[in-house]
Image 1 (cartoon, rainbow, N blue to C red):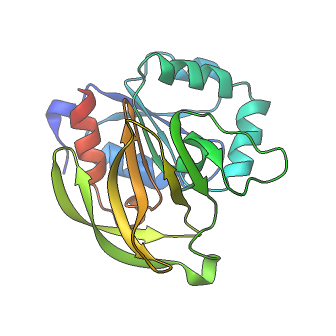
Image 2: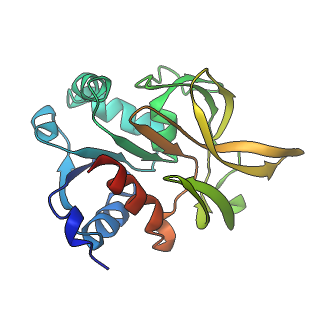
Amino acid sequence: MAHPEEASATIGVLALQGGVEEHLRILEGLGADTRRVRVPRDLEGLDGLVIPGGESSVIDKLARTFGVAGPLREAVNHGLPVLATCAGLIYCARDLDNPSPGQQTLGLLDITVRRNAFGNQRFSAERTLPVLVGEETLPIEASFIRAPLVTRVGEGVEVIATVPHDGAEEAVVGVRHGAVTALSFHPEENDEARVHAAWLDSIR
């Protein structure tokens, strides 16, 4: 359902690779104006940016090839709000436990992330987990697809979602700090709009 009060927000989706269309569908359903972001000029005038899932190393390489990585980092450092899912979380991290050769990140969050921590595609799963959405904790239906895991959380970074994993009762799968919210999982794969809606509310 559209929310007319959010109609003026212009939200970009980094459209280099990955699950772009799912985020566009959710955002447009919430009344946001959307724009595919591929080159630096696409960042102009945005109220927020979504970094979707996909292959984090490919997103990194293409972002540098198209010259958008540096301007994107600068825009976020100047306050551009970001919502990142799965590979987007990896791309926002400062450090990676297991990067691909030559892989770089935006370094927007003081966290360390392990890529593919939930196993390969055949071990992917859907589950409902409590997520701090805005100021309220809600049960969110989420898809974990070759999902990363946050293995270190730096000072000032807020944990907003955890799941039991590999013997740990509270493995970190969602964080936020400043203008950046990042999730290991995909709410958009299940047409779960509440995370996006709360994020849009926070940047109005």
